[in-house]
Each structure stands twice: as C-alpha cells, then as structure tokens.
Length: 503
Image: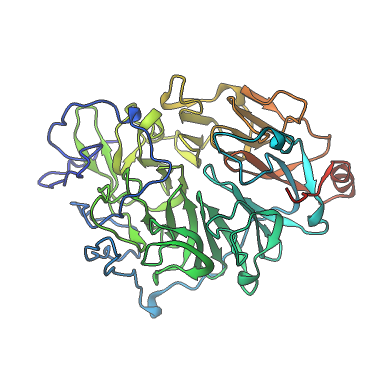
C-alpha cells in the first residue's frame, strides 16, 4: 500500500557504505553476500546515527535516548528510563506446554562446530531420540537454544531455569566455565520465576514474570546490555534498562533484542552489519545499553525510501547477524547482514534499519509467526503457509525472497526451530526435520540412519508421542514431548535413556 514519501529527510550514510538507506544513487559494488561474516566480530557498538525520526511511534513510546559518544573504553551512555508511575504492572505467564525433554544431538559440547573433531570422539555424535535420565520427574514447559549456540536452557513448570552445554564464557551461570553435560538448575536465579530465555553464541538472557531481564556470559561486544564491555560475566546481572516491562527477547550471535509491553523494540551488542537497526555499523562508537529501534522503512521499485509509521512490534527473531520482526499489522521487517538473501529483499545488500518485506504487506497475506536461522529466515502466513528465504547450504543457490515451502503445504505448524543449517518442525501429530550435510545428529534420524536430508522428512517416533515445542542449537535439537495421559507417559518411557558420562 502506498505511503507518504519521506521528503526533506536527510539519511546519513553508514561509514561502511553498505546497505544504507538514502535517497541518492548508490555506488556500484559487489553484493554483500560475497563478504564473509566474521565468526567472532571485534567492532564497536552503535551510536546515534539514525538520521531520521518518525511520527507515529508505538503507543507509550518515549523519544529514543540520544547516547553520548562512547570510546573503546565504554564511555557514558543514556539508560532508557520510564517514571515509576507510568510503568505498566505485568505478571507474565510462560508457555502452556508441559512435558518431558527429548534430545537429538551431538553431545560433545566443546567440539560442536569445530573444524576438526578427534576420531575417538565420533561415538558422541548423531544420537537418536533420547530422554535425559537426570530429568526424571521434571516437567518442562519451554526449551531454548539458538542457531549459533552450543548451549541450551529449559524452563520448568515452576518457572526455574536450567542450563547445560558449552560454557567457555560462563553462559550457563554455574560459577565456573566448565562444560555441563546434563541440565542443571541455575541456583543464582532460583528466587525468580523465569518465563522466557534466549541464547546467543556465548551469552544468555532470562526474562522474569515481572518483565525484568537478567544477562550472563560473554560481553565483549556489549551484548549483555550492562553498559560495559568485558570478556565474561558469569553471574546474572540485570540489564541497564528501566523502561516499560519487557515481554519478548531474542539473541543473535553477539547482539540482543528486547521488546517492551508497548511494542517498542530495543537492541544492544555487535552492530557490525547494521543488525541493531540504528542506521549504523558502529565502527567507531559504542552504545552498550538497550536503545530503541526508531526507524522502519519500505523501498519502492523505483528506489524511493518511505517511512513506515505506527509499527507496534509483536515478535522478534535473530539469526547470526540479522533480525526479523513481526508487527501488529502482520507485516514483517528485516535488517542486518544481507548475504545469501536472508533478508528477503531480492538483493544481498546489508540493511541498517528495519525494511519491510513486501510479500507480507498485502491483505490476507500477512504473517503470524517468524523464525530466523543462521543464514536464512522463515515466516508462517496468517493462512498457515510456510515461507523460506536465504540459504541453508551456502555453497548452493540462495533464495532471495520468500517462497512457499511446498513440502509442508497443508501442515499446521505449531513450533519451528532453526540451527546452523538444519530445521525442525512440530506440525499436526508429527515432528519433521531436514538439513544439508554436514549434520551432527540434530535431525533425530538415529545413529545408524542417514545423517542428512535435503527434503523435509518425518522423524520416526513411537506412535502416541506428541511434540509440544521444538528448539534447535548449532547442531542439536530439543523436543518437549507431551505427557498428559498414561499412554503418553508409557510411550516416553520406552525411549532410550541418555546418561552423559565424563569425557
């Protein structure tokens, strides 16, 4: 639908010269997708270089704070603050799921994602479907990991947070940096009721029922939102934010997103590819606290840049270096690293501010769910169709704009999760997975079964096991199996039990 042209508005060009939003002609250059993403970025964080402020911000939004320029040491930053008398009082509830945790995974957490794996460790890879013996009697309502993560989290029905996996930066919060083979309660948060959590490559966020966010793990890019840059923060600390209660969160590799109860989105951490949404790649200044994403745009076929007002965010998802949001009008926006078409704009340029994905901006074609993988994206349309864009296999041709996934046409998708290059879906009465080689057990096909599948394939589980929710990490998958009835409990008991041994 047409929108008013952003006339007389000066867009600043990010210093990278890549994916900037401006009215003038672009310089020619190679596609951003040919650049290699940095697996361990080392730039600074974003300053206030938006260059555009829009009317029609979400209800209750305060004007975004303008942080002081910060040097490498951190410098001063303005913390989002809301007067106490205007804050909403919330009591957030967690997922309605209840069940037992199943795992399909590579289990040597220190070797996952490494280029070379010792031969003697191969037996710890490509597990089939298992239950953790240490979780007998523990009912789970949420499982969490991330496309960049080799660690995982679970939230019990009582709101307690457990963690396990790789722990090099203290992202498990167990007072050390030793890997943890099986889920263990996070004692430092046992006094809180946790309703949601998110995993980055080496950092973790946890959301309480009152809308507060705790962060721990790696913080070298400011991805914990604590106002500083440190190698690791092993104990949970509240982020430097005093605004409206937070209701949703997501983590990329080295950046984080939080959403408040009014539909405002805030970002912090690595800004290298524009994934923070502040019209900057943050080369020279650092903003290490949550800052509101204030600009949403669309680009017309003739190159005009139009502001999109009244964006009230309802969901957020992060890939390694890109971000997706779903708003109250069922529109999808994407920004950050544009390589392999993961932003869905039919081009590979980086986007420094949220840009409308055109396919979902038509009556009856809006989106209802969004998911982000490492280098790809998914959306479920309001009528139930699954759309994909980006690349799961970066050596093959990329999908430059959203296309329907024909293999899942007609399936009612309940939950979907993305790994490095694999996908797992809970739909109708089935669990479905696929992913190109190499895979490490996350597809759940079993030790002596094919390790990968380029087409969606049903995971063979005993009849009667119903997947409530799925999660996927870099190379492992987690499933909550419903255990409401006695027959369901009996079916789960028949699955092999996994008791990790010290490696």
